[in-house]
Length: 481
Image (cartoon, rainbow, N blue to C red; front, side, top):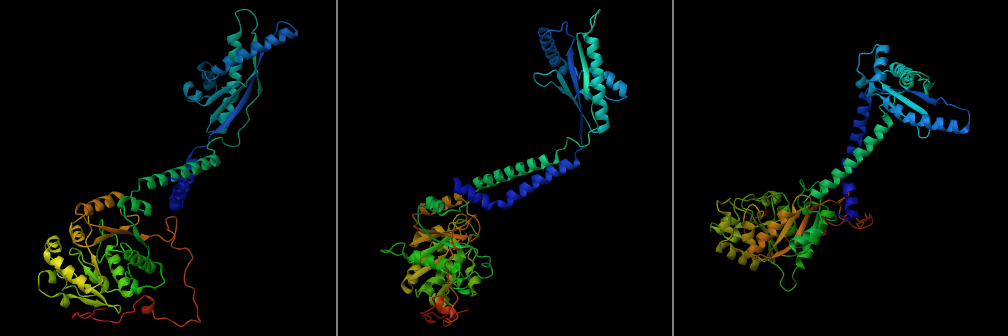
């Protein structure tokens, strides 16, 4: 991933990042509110050495002696010898070891001072403990340093008594919230980048071309209304989705100028990638451009084209293959563009055998003689072999890949399945490409058709390219649409 990929990931996963940041702030706030406040009381001790003289040398040596003692004194303030008398004095029910966990002492560098800190959930008890420890420690040092006969060379004096703390030192709500926000933000970014790194779906044309080694014929824009209006004939001819299929139609015609494909199989890796709607709309746009096109519903397992077009599917491809009806009797005309449609017919128990039979080869030759282009909607390639069988006897296959759903390994296996039978891959179609957000691929580039009230109104059928008359092309079946 380069910098642009990271930036796109952050834009795409911004909601996750914001949610994790808010979650971190909420967790830190809850922790701060639920934590018991801890108060700190501080007292300060002064360590002095009894000098033997009044000269500068004696004063210097006394100072060094006091500094050496300070280092040791700071280590024994939380010892049982000091804390046990304090516990007894204040009447506490706690051990010296437990109390020592809340007592700390530090000696500032190059000083003869000792700072004693006591933390407790009670501000009053924290103050009383700090003062009691300071007094008890002074007495303990005097007892430790006094020889059998003579005067103690060191004295510890309380120079600042502990006062009653007014605000807790813990929890530090502001700092906790800031840390929670940072941790949540880091987790959000980390999870977003990890999810993007683990996402193996196809989202780039570069990945599509690298895996298939063929050109991408088109990118079909995502349309939230596609479920209700799957056909471009029902859309505004100037819509992004309609333009996508016109681009696909144009690019397909330029796949091979010397040997243009006339029988085209439209398939995908798995179900749900939009192959049937792509086949329908490609055939419709071909017919709208004045090309004699026929759409064959060869998905004999889960046929959908008949439902999309609103035509009868009781008689169709399987009926012709088993000799029940002729091609003329099975073909239907859809729309004013003269698009011919051969529905699936009854669902057979052996689709692969029918599609790979000699009758199917003969039917394709017959359709080639009647039409300029034959568009065949085939089942997905990975679950069944129907599409591979058809692709072998046709001019080639167009693979439909759904943005963000088709995995790269699925696409690789699909390409291997086609090349294993020496089928030609004409190109790919990246379907349902976002037009907005971080994953948009440049559809919304601002170029469109300006509304002009002074222009004559054009019939929608004409603008879609439906320029052909409603001819029957020798077919007996009547249009159902």
